[in-house]
Length: 466
Image 1: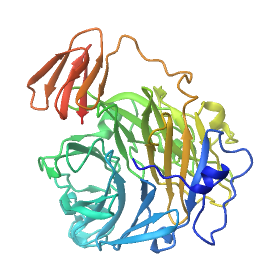
Image 2 (image 1 turned 180 degrees about the vertical axis):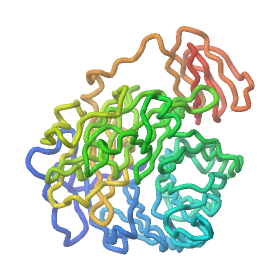
Image 3 (image 1 turned 30 degrees about the horizontal axis):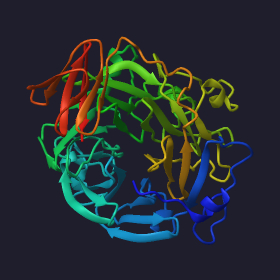
Image 4 (image 1 turned 90 degrees about the vertical axis):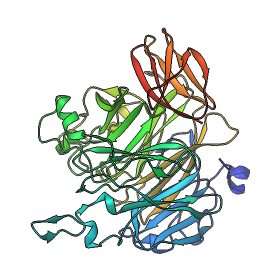
């Protein structure tokens, strides 16, 4: 990734330059951990100032890419808006991949076209139900800020309640075999599979979130997906984390706080609910999350906050991975006074921003390593119509964080460049996605770039090799 640091930050150690004439926000006393530094921030100046038109944005390579509904993509850097990419059918959904591409969703006919809506007993329900046969995405090269691939279909998912959020994509979505997991509000998840941006099949594999959670012991009704439905693959595509709420009366932002990331594991054929949940106290249901890895450990960043007693997601936490047997944590009847820091041990946090208010909710998150600086990362956060922020995170003092304890009896399988790394008691088998045995061994196993199924110690993992 291209390294972008501001001269003022390097020279003085203070916050870098921002857009001209914008007032500096108030961050409250002692509410930011010492290993976080605000690099730059800015307030949208174009149509992205309207949070109803621009609900999502993603930061990457020192820039922000913000959707403007039925208009296109506004691009910003530390100096302000630098470009508008026209696309009249743009939806409020955007994200990126590991290779530095940004992709955004758009529907035939645009946001409010009746052709995209479900018809019930001859009546159209505009803006409520959407059909994935109308849904496409296009890809932007962040080096040139030009669209390099247009109108890639996302066909095959049945008519359903909204799927707004596109996930971060593992690998290079332009040149590799990739999967795009999409969580659909209140129903199920689906994997859209592509090889060099050619959809492999219209028969989209699905994993039924509602059924899986109920089978895990949660009672009906299972209000399974929040309004900002999201999913993310991690551990080399071995797992999917799905934003899910079987106890919406507890975890919903207006009523209480709780944990709401369900873990699905790949069993060699499908993704199955693992009966585990990430420990994310005070995770606002309208916001997203992002999982990244450092020194063999997973970390999750998620928006949170407690401005005026409301978890408005105007701040954020970085947590080491900790899995629980239940998504429940605190309820609305319990004291909300800054308990989120007390209940867990975040490795970094930035607490509530006083001038955001209840409407100030981060909805776009991305984390990228800073080139040449091991253990240091750049964090991008976007809050619709409010602000774009770039933070620097230093995890070099967090490698030994408590409670990150690996199971010594469980195989550890990772994808590398031209190889698969396996740490296991038994000999690992490497298969192609078609089921052909490619290699056997342990330690470093050399294989061509591609997607593989690796089995070791009664564990199966889907691994991407670059």
